[in-house]
Length: 481
Image (cartoon, rainbow, N blue to C red; front, top):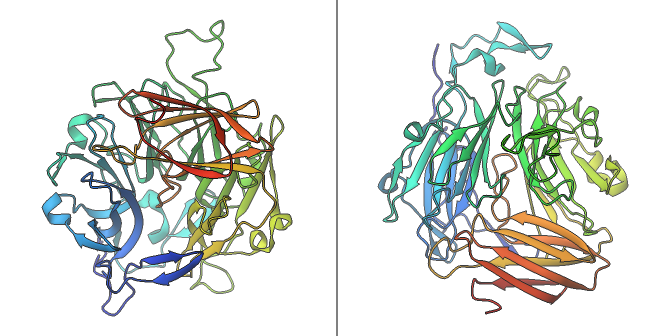
């Protein structure tokens, strides 16, 4: 077969930019510089030049694009000058600063070498289901990933193979930088479809060690999206993974803090345990193909909940031109008891069926709680506005004066009402999406924040006490000094 064309048809849709006007969105694409026709897939957001404005990296089937933010919702395509115009079948992308030099680097997931000879009659079996040959990822070779190191002058250097993180056998769909072992250096986790996931642990000098197997996180299922959060409230960050149909979603609990030295040697290193069945998130996913996901506290009671959006990759029997639509899932966590799906009790939108892919959360209407944006395959964007009863909340926006301006990689520990919560700026990418850099903490009935500790990316620590609730605080490294 031949490589399928990566050229979009003339007159097709372009990338779109919508301005949020107090909860109402206005299409401002025309004057933004983003009205480009691509086979668009994902987006990564980061300030690549430390000018205080967030830039955009768009991953595509075909040439990816980097847009520099000029201010005023205007962008300039600097792909070629920056040297990041990777071409292939891209999945997600993520910005991070694993070498801690203050400039954001870029990791790009590549999926597979898609080729099509025009024959749709041949079928193959995958996961016990009969699929057209052209839809089965097992039928294609993987494409290596790319890691672009920011040189600080507007240019990037591709060094993935030199660092051993190109993951050439993986069919990658998403990745995230997270400091799982709390040594101050961001690690890299890569999610692969029909091939093992990869965990690359940062050695502390910008290089990495592949600890996929020894960390027990080399998940061999069809991995799609990821969520990061302290799911079990033990002080470290856990990993949630969405999977294909007939495969349980993965709840990889980080055992770094609560391992028993009597059972596990202290030199064992970081490892994970899949707790999906124990916390009620295993069998609940078997009938779905999961994609975008997020750990978030939708009712602001201080306990992390979970959102997953679903949509099949198989054609409908009734209309083969359409894929099978599936409903999204909202799971409420009862601390110490596990997760329970809310269904239509949380609103009629949770019983509607879509062919969903991306999920991003954020406070769209400025009322303190988290709303959701869902992208669908060949369908409209969905906005799910949170209108349920909620507790008190606290928003945190970190800013640094010169380098890594949005403090990507900073770790926050907040204590309110006797409950400790942990989060990391920039951790988790859902599926083909970007999570908000403003963090939201649910506080329940707590009337003040007892302690807020920020571990900045350079190792400095800021500690504040007795803060008011129901506010978004912008904080710099010099606060409290």
